[in-house]
Amino acid sequence: MAWAKLTTKTLTSAGDTITTDTFTTKKFNILMAHVPFVTSDIGLYMTFNSNTNNVYAYRDSADGSADTTTTTNSKLPMSGGTAGTDNADMFAIGYVLNISGQEKLYIGFSVSYGDGSGATNAPHRSERVGKFVPSPDADITSVTLTNIDVGDFATDSNLSVLGTD
Image 1 (cartoon, rainbow, N blue to C red):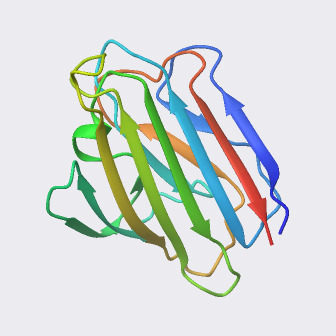
Image 2 (tube, rainbow, N blue to C red; image 1 turned 135 degrees about the vertical axis):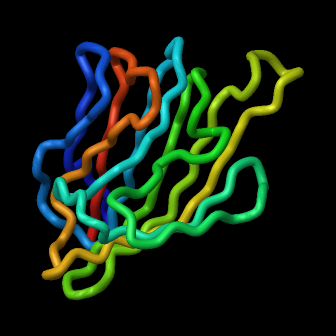
């Protein structure tokens, strides 16, 4: 199984969305996002194929807290809880099962500096699982990250997608 970069998008100025170019559908995808330090809180949420209908459901947890469950939603979190609203560097990674004719399944993790730099401050983490259930069924061919909080994604924020069959 050989992985290949399908697309990457890097912001050249601050903004609230990062949208990939259309890419060739693959059964397995890895999504990687990096948002450099910003001065206001951010929250990373994503949609597939520009679909903002209520076709997403997810379960997530931050810093080991109890799960929260959300159904019939217009987006999926790529970061969440405390790790989703830091104004520190944030790194998120997600795995997508993108098989034609099936619900698209997602597993994601994110980490940020936490409440300060240095070894005396533990990082924040979050994890989530979700699904994308478009009707009619559609393979994932693009991803949009949207900031739902008060800040902006910083210049050089990046979203990359890898894929393999």
